[in-house]
View 1 (cartoon, helix red, strand yellow):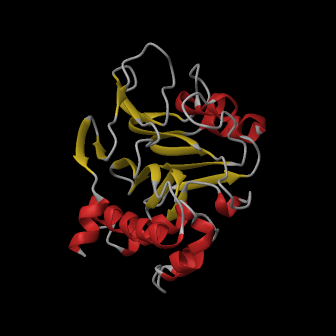
View 2: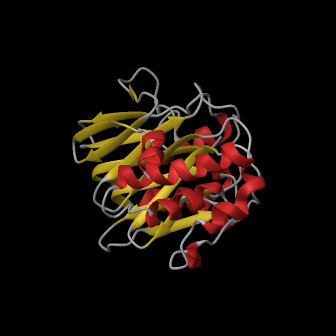
Length: 263
C-alpha cells in the first residue's frame, strides 16, 4: 500500500512535509507503520501549485530515499498547496507513467488502495473513460483510471458526487468480474484552490487518513499516517469525504452505493 502526504496553507518548503519530520514521507517510504507493506519503493512523485494554474509535476521510479534530486528540489521549492506520494505497486509496472500524482489540466490526483481483481476487468475499466479524456491515459494503474473516470463524471462541478459515481462504477466491475476486497482507498486531489481527500472501503479495512493544522506554518497537512508522534492528528473516519479550504475543514459522508442507485 502506498503512502502519501498533502499540504494546503501558507507557502512552505516541500521538505517541511516530505523529508524533515521524524516520520516524514521519505521515512515512510522505507519504514511505514500503518499499512501492510513497510517498504514503498516503486517510485515517487510530487505535484505542486505555484504562480501558474497548472501544477508542476516531478515523478521518478527510484525509491524516494535514494534520489538526491528529490531532496534538493524539496529544499528549494516553496508552495501553498502540494501533493506527494511514494508508491508500492499492486501489480502494474514500475514506470514514471504509473507513479502518482496524476495531472490533467489544473487537477492533480493521488491514491492509495486497491480495486479487487482489477487485472480481470482492466479493459472494461478503460472503456468507461470517454474518448475526449482517453489521451490522458498514460499508464496502466487503477488509480489513474479512477481519476479520469471522476473527471468524466463531473469533478469540475461537484467533486464528491463525481468521485462517488466513479467509485461506484469501478466497484460494480470488481463485484462482477473481480475479487474481494472490492474497494479500499484513500485519495487526495486538488484543483489548485481546494484540497480534497477521501477514505473508503467495502470492508472494515479502509486505509488510514489523518489531518493536522499547524499554527506555526499557517497550514494543514493531510497524510496517510502521522508525520510526528505525540501531536494532535485528527483521524478521519471511514466513508468520509473531506474538503480543506484554507483553515476550514468540511467532512461529509462518502456513499458510492447511493450514487450507484441514483444513476
